[in-house]
Length: 208
Image (cartoon, rainbow, N blue to C red; front, side, top):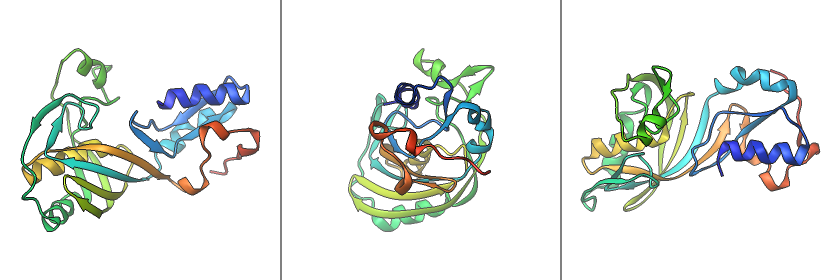
């Protein structure tokens, strides 16, 4: 289910035409998606600037075109020699304010065209790095080739690209297999509502 699919479902359930979301989730991602209703759709800019938190899993030894398991495999490399300590040391290099090059399969616009539209045509162009901030990058579990981690970051951070960059640093490649967004600003997954359960009682006023 895409973020657009969620918007369509909410429109049907609540019988409202003006429905939008604040911050796209990747197709393979689950978790918190803020839905804006009616006049609140005008508040989009306030919501997209919020910091976010994720729990995710990367797979070592596999590099793909989209930096996740849904992309075409570009290369497979040996990962058996990688240790937990090596992964922890690699993670340290990404904490703080860093430059991140957005992946080709993203909605970032270059010359008015979204990168994923070019990627679908097999076109890859040079992308300018963007400043992002990672406040926390914590290793949670290692069961090679799977590495589970927790991330707190600024807006505009691509978890898929982070996995790709970590894989490059370890010399074996990596891609994302699972992402769950656990928080957007003060909106936490514990307070979220499943799409199929949404009704008018879940509408909240926003005091920004």
